[in-house]
Image 1 (cartoon, rainbow, N blue to C red):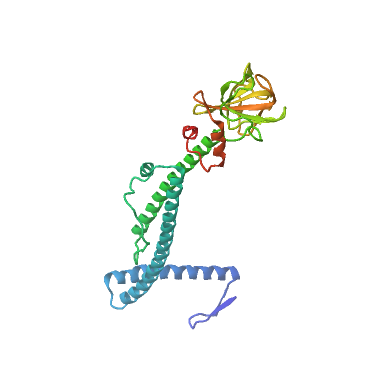
Image 2: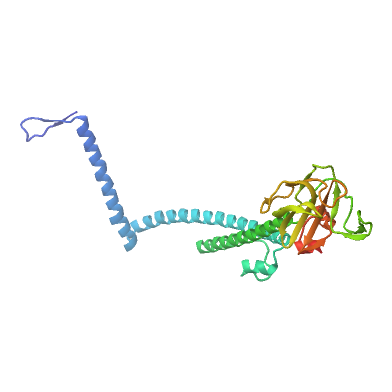
Amino acid sequence: MQILITHGSLARTRVLHFNRWQLAGALFGLITVLTLLSGTVYHVIFLKAAREGWPVVSQVVKLVVRDEFAQRDRFMRENLDAMATKVGEMQAKLIKLEAMGERVSGMAGVKPEEMQQIKPGAAGGKGGPFVPVARPSMDQLNGWVASLDEQADQNSDLLTMVEARLLEKKLVSLMIPNSRPVEGPIGSGFGFRADPFSGRAALHTGLDFPADSGTPIHAAAGGVVLFNEYHPQYGNVVEIDHGHGLVTRYAHSSKILVHAGDIVKRGQTIALVGTSGRSTGPHLHFEVLLDGAPQNPAKFLALADGETVPTTRKAAR
């Protein structure tokens, strides 16, 4: 690119030569100067005019700033309204969750005073629709969110306690001997009967399950094997401790498959039917003892048809 400079005072015309890089540098410098100049004009003239109230410039600046502030304020209000709606939906869900938690806690046996310990601030009934204010502030929203967070923690604690109680009930039910040790009819029940050897009246302290020799004998509930040994009256006998003073006894077996100290599960095969000891034929003699006192095993087996088992001693009664 060439630029010709001609003037009457010059003896001859001057010629200036520029390449593309020089032109690009000159253009970049011009843009930089204009940017700095515009920034200087804005900060020095417009801001000063707005602060000092210049007649024309201050009005223009106020209009521009007012429109910008109005757009920003409208955007923030729309967001606050959306957040308030979400908070209201969360509160409604928490109210439903709290009501459900109270129903489940009642089923799990959590007492009202225990729930009050979890929720110390809950005094009396509360409810009603959520009606947010027309224009909630940020402080109000922060307070609602903090309250929702606290309610969520309380409901979480309540559900944790309910889960623990349900698990405790399940464990208790697993430890109650209400499963049949041998499938089949009962030959001789609990109570007084004529002794099969002497013919005299005698107390039969368990249930007899007639079965073929070698039929599997299953644990009526989970527990720990107390001992497995031979007894003159019971023959090959196994006793299982289920806790809370409950013990089951399995007598007259032909073979014992567990040892003292073993942990057994409900339904686990622990022995095989036989006719060892004081027996007239192959069968299982099944006893349930509570604190060493014989109980009617039929009462425990009947609990298998019930929905819940409150406590071991209540089941025994």
